[in-house]
Image 1 (cartoon, rainbow, N blue to C red):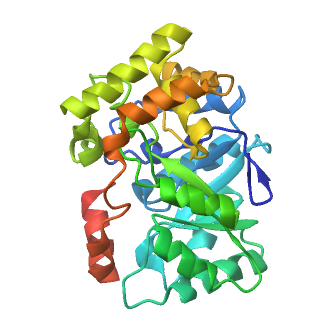
Image 2: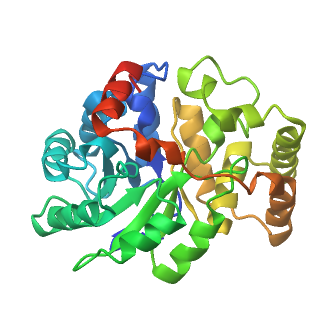
Length: 314
């Protein structure tokens, strides 16, 4: 798959876990896991300035220093709409390079979308990044953002998409016609769609999508995944990531250990049949409604959102 001009393969990695904060991690094992994935076929890694207040970017910067084949993506916080270039410069100092610069979530309602897009374009023009994208923009915001571009195109929109939250499928269809890629964050629903024992990470405990796995409808999805995995002799995680490939999204799961990293690598060679995709679609059809991103977030002033993020320590 290509995101703009960037060759990224069919599955990438997310690095929220490397920020610590909402995740309990063994950083030595975490490093081994990401090194394994990046040395065995994975060629894309995504982070953000808010993950651990730069800690994740520093972790990724060390990983990619001697891995020039890896595409590096990061995100400017939505409350930094007025300082996109400064944020990007700080991120680049931690990462070493930025190939895809994204705006992490829609700005407050009083900020014009076109201001965000134009400043992203300035980041390309100034050599801070090769490509630009957004994150958590719904169809209406993507259509608006497309009218704002002058010289450089928005090549991606990173949103939550998994078998327990399929609202993004209309966005995927729009992406096919408008030539942008939907990058799927939380493609395994933080593990809820593939296993029962998730541990006590705060990131999972507060996630409504994770809770769906414990409903009768959610258990049906999990059981369908396991059935397909058993019949194919594959891990449940690889089956879900292969479903993403079939649906046209670009999944970026996080990993915490080498076993999970091996399952991500496994997905590179696994392709589901049309029947298997249909089985998963039918089992998860009920989760095709809802909102992509909480609309009330746009009514929270930037300074309050910034304070909330730093108190929450995501």
